[in-house]
Length: 217
Image (cartoon, rainbow, N blue to C red; front, side, top):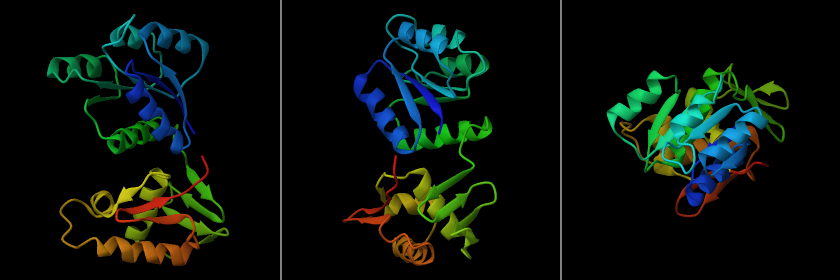
């Protein structure tokens, strides 16, 4: 679990980010203007800051100047190359323009946390443990014989836990956009995972959509 500061003045976007990252187990602090963000940075240690540029009070650049040694992902409507080069040149870790896909932001967050060694090294659910470093799954402490795609599918479900993913999205994330097979491939691999891991009640079928891994927050 990471401590994340979300600095975004649009309440609906701020709350969307908080809820989705919270479902992944992260603890989020919300700031709605630049001055409030600077106050939080002085009061608390964070593992990551998600930062808008156009903010009431101090703008994103001023907030960024108060961030010392903390990874920052800029999330902003400013899509110009000069804006992107300005923040990346000053040491920001990533830059995402609005509108954005929540799955992409979540993936970028995990990528930055991995680089800064703040991400999870393993995930546990009931009797199952996923070891990210060794790319292995254990059931009751015994390694499970699974294919690379079965591992990647389960890891994708874990990283997007409590979020419903369509079959098409799972195909894209696990097999790649150029995969020639159909969505039945996802169904077959889900059945195998359920059988091997004993997670029938956790890997839930979402009617007419796809699947969701249900896990405690």
